[in-house]
Image (tube, rainbow, N blue to C red; front, side, top):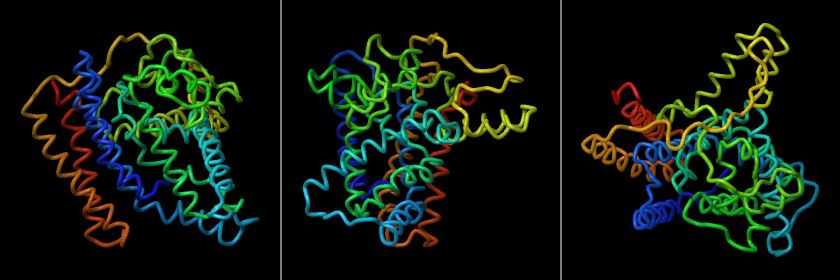
Length: 355
């Protein structure tokens, strides 16, 4: 449920990615891998493409509830109303984010964001194509009932999202007293770690106080190992978006009890039916670096970079055109073409192709 401000911020995002890459190289650190970054950015573009068609559902439902069911009207010129809304949005984001890690069908949408084994600014743009688009808005409907206008809400949720881009970095250490109040890069690195002590911790958006209040806070100790407990094993944006849905469907199909077949969709991610082995215990990570590496091939990477630049340029046009008429034939054709191109990047970097 992001506004056009996110689109306007894209050049800023790329600028910070370039800055991060430059600083890392000066410090002798390798924080980016080309294939992984293309997968991250491909997921981000795909999310924006699909979101263009979902906005009538997300913002539209919020606007309808506000127009016909609100219990009050909050003044947009009131500083107090904006402050209350900012904290309320962040708290409801915490609630949604926590649910997205503890309910399988929500995790199937959110898992995309965690499937990169790197941690840099490009990972912030690695977003889900399916699931989150059609579930997140439900958690924010209380704000419509409370009388915060759609415009106020969209601005506030956008600011929340923009803040979170800047905490996806390994170059920033701890920030002193701010660590007690804000969600910092240190806190969010923990959230992306697969170390047993880090799993399902630090769900905050802007304010880490929610985690401290509700018992989900964990400070950063050892350097996190990033990615998923079971590595994705692919640079494919499509598979990143589909794999958990496939796993849940397979578990639901293979288990014998009907109750388990249904519960599989709302169970915590570590749950397994008794006839399929029972609950999974998170093991200590057994890898020091990425589990998937694309063999070097400069010619291939140059071709992908050129094709990706074309997709990026097209996406800029698409977002503006979709805002005017998302159902125009040319807009739909452009969306399909861009998604096919993004999927092809993953195919190019697939382990089978690499061999």
